[in-house]
Image 1: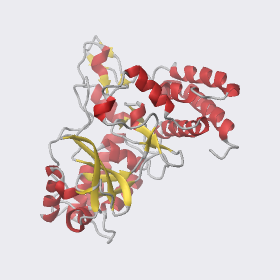
Image 2 (image 1 turned 120 degrees about the horizontal axis):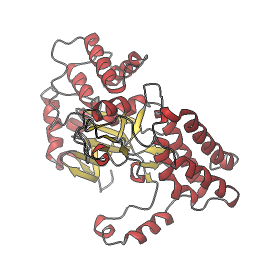
Image 3 (image 1 turned 60 degrees about the vertical axis):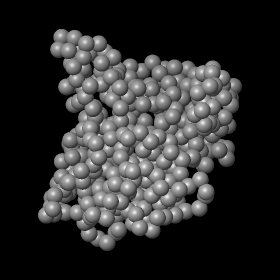
Image 4 (image 1 turned 30 degrees about the vertical axis):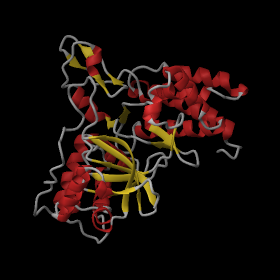
Length: 382
């Protein structure tokens, strides 16, 4: 094991809490034994150690990943209402003792219905949840396994992993214990290189932007990565389990792997549209800026009622194109750059919800994807 990695037990108190609850029989999951008994789950670099969000690189045996624990609702910026109920530490008190598997399934379906709306195939999604809940694959779901799964099901990121399970741009869930979970590692960010914060804070913003551009993949690889982001936008718009909104489309939330496959690094701000709209309609406002969630989900303020309207002002695709503009135009081949720039600016100009402009939305997305794919489809980079 690499020297930079440390057994979980020498780090922060919240991880001790996980194992204390495991030993008391309150929680269980596929990594509990490795973390608490065998000590084969290791934590490495700490990305953030705030009480509300602890994220580490780590290894489960020889399997690398990203470990997240004790995560509360993501910061809500200027939005008074939150997308999920704020909690301190998970109580792990649901379901209650004596709950049958069928009753637990009913709990799951009702929760999913509240999060994503009354979709026709929620029973299939509930079956996926029950499969994950059986962490030791013994054909039975214990009460500690059910409580751990129920707690994770409250998190936006965990829900998105379920909804997009099997799609290559969504990191795989590797294991969990209570509300600690391990995701597939996404080794690279879209831009730049990772520098120690003590150095990064002294670099002027202009120089940092130039450095970010220096350390990007070749243009064909960037084209492949960009296609992946467009496919994510398509998957979460009128997807199998409803529509989702991308409320932080900064480059820091996305990355790619060694094969230059696009990957979501942080899905906490990709939220069900139904949840978003219900919460926004309860939000009091005086100006449009009071109706902001994350960095990118803004609605308008109805001044006659002093309530936020439910429809976002910009669709996911426009925000994705804004993020891609500088990334994909730099170094673009001369025979495609002019058309690519034209299509990107048409995309960025999209306003209103995707539902209101469904045909235009689909046309622009398909045109962009086709343009990029035609340029790289006959190369080894594809």
